[in-house]
Image 1 (cartoon, helix red, strand yellow):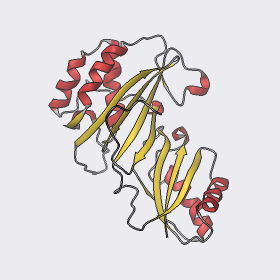
Image 2: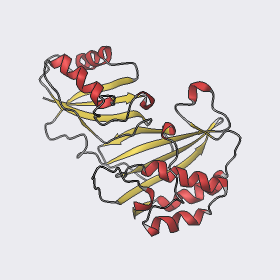
Image 3: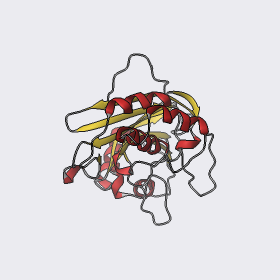
Length: 257
C-alpha cells in the first residue's frame, strides 16, 4: 500500500528535510518512527528538500507499507511517536502511481519579515528588520520581474555535492502583503532551485533598502550568473506552505497563507 502524508515541522530543530549522516533531519526522524511502527525499514520520498532552519506547514511525502487500520489510525500512530517539532497533519492511502516528488505540479512558499524587532517567540520564524525600514512599493515593483519562465541561475546556490537540476523555472505568483506587524512574501512556481526563494527575498530586501533599483532584478535575472549582488535572506523566515498536485488556477487569486 502507498501512503501520502502531509506534515508540518519547525525547521529550527533540524538540519533540513533530507537524511543526514548525523541523523538530525526531519526525514531521519520520520523513518525511525516508521521503522518502529512497521518493524522494518521504511523509505520515505519527499516532495522536495528544505534546508536547515526552513519550516514547513505542508510538506508532503509518501511511503509504501501494509497497514490495515486506516489512515486516521496511522496518523495517530505517527503523532504519538514523533517529537513535538514534527506534526503529521493528514495520512491517506493513494494509488501506487502517486509520487510525492514526481507528481507535484508546484509549491507555495511564504517568507515572513518582522517590522522592527521580533519578539523572542517569533525570532525563529521571521526575519527581523530591527531598526531598519523598507520601501514596500519598490519591493512589489521588483517582484514582478520574477513572474514567468526564466533561467534562475543568478538566484540559486551550488549544493556542492554534484547535484544538477535544470535552472529554467516558471513562477506564476510573487506577491507582497503588509500585515500590522510583518511583511509577507508569497511565491508559487513549478519548481525551485537550491536557495532560490531565499535569494529572491534577499535581493528584494536590498531593493527595499535602496541598495538596488527594482529594474536591477531583471538585469541580474537575465545575466544568469550568481554574484555577490545577491545575498540569501536568512532561513528562519521561510516556510513551505503547500505542494500542489493539480495545476493551480492563476487568475485573480488572493494571498492565502
